[in-house]
Length: 52
Image 1 (cartoon, rainbow, N blue to C red):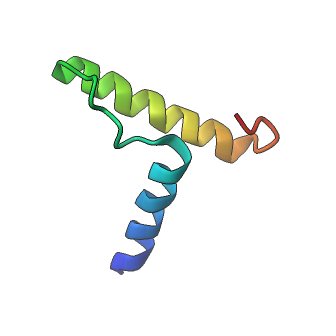
Image 2 (cartoon, rainbow, N blue to C red):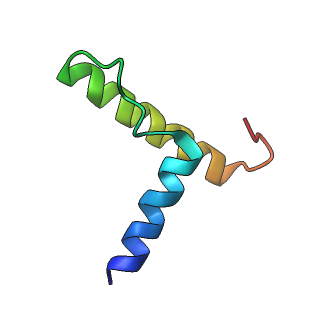
């Protein structure tokens, strides 16, 4: 049960670099960083031809 969850977070970190939040200074900034990275990951998953 743990392996699929770890695979998801591994993929998410590899694709978006979501753990690189060293410049975040507030909790609002952290939420913006996380939601922005999640949105980018879902865009890449839905439209792989973008490849940015």
